[in-house]
Image 1 (cartoon, one colour):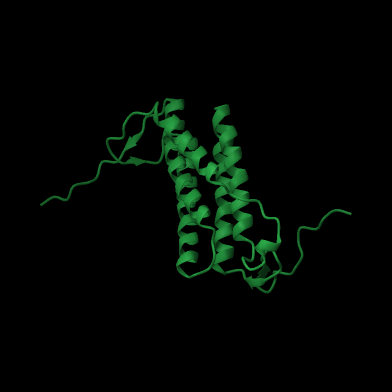
Image 2 (tube, helix red, strand yellow; image 1 turned 180 degrees about the vertical axis):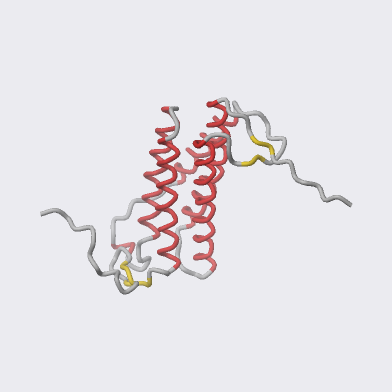
Length: 189
């Protein structure tokens, strides 16, 4: 018999964390891992819109880490020590930093703010960056409200948003798409 995707247990606005604790679907913990799931989908969309094999491999690794982060956020922290939840490591952040440095070696120095656009792959990477920043803000909000979130999760999301920004520029570079410089409108006297 096939696994049913619907359980009807959430019909009254509650859901279960890993470990069985019931919380409202509007709980910040649910919002945080839902946003990480949204981010993961956008990272997949970025990958689907590029041809660079090395970048595709890195993006697949990032998607795996985002599932790790999602499982961490979806877990009742009081029950987590008793379960085998995938873990995030400092090396995962180091990988992002190395990739940022690698891409920056070929990119021209930024002389102005840039607007997202020029190619669907560039714009999608910018959307992923924005969703990543939102996920980071939600996790920081959890932390500020003394709801446990692994500090490495916040650090990873922070570095990932930097990676996605540089990736957007790098994709444009690979595609030969000119960056769109922001030219602010100056107030007339």
